[in-house]
Image 1 (cartoon, rainbow, N blue to C red):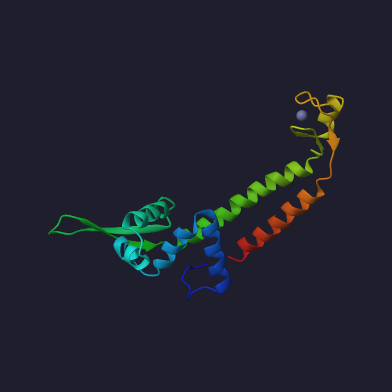
Image 2 (cartoon, helix red, strand yellow):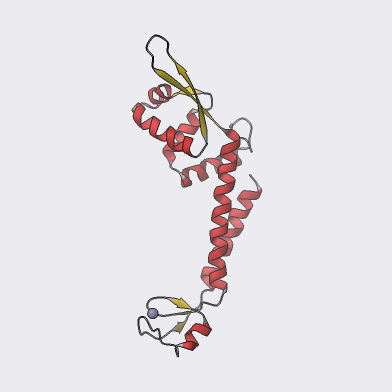
Length: 172
Ligand SMILES: [Zn+2]
């Protein structure tokens, strides 16, 4: 997947925007959109009518995640540095893939817990049938009885989300 609007289908572009927005913030996405061509931070600030310090903070966040890079040049007269910022298409794609993969790993772990038979709960925790049996179905922590509960809705929700994210990942 590339990140230029011209190069990729609308769905993938929107997907990339949505994921970046969710994992970072809509303001970070605004900056990335502004970098359809390399720009100096003061140019972006002027275009968005936002303080340069705010733009630099957002650019630094993106730089920490390797999603942008810069070229630094020194003005010989003033001795000041200017930074020309560019987005890194391949890193953005990689970042989105990693983000989706991490979400999937977490969901898979959640699903394992749900399916592991931790189907009894008290006022403070969830345990398996074996654990509930060991304490005669009374929780040693809160002294409430362990009651069986139906976690099929949880399982269904997690499975649906896994399918959704797997499809996104596959279609990147
Ligand atoms: Zn308890």
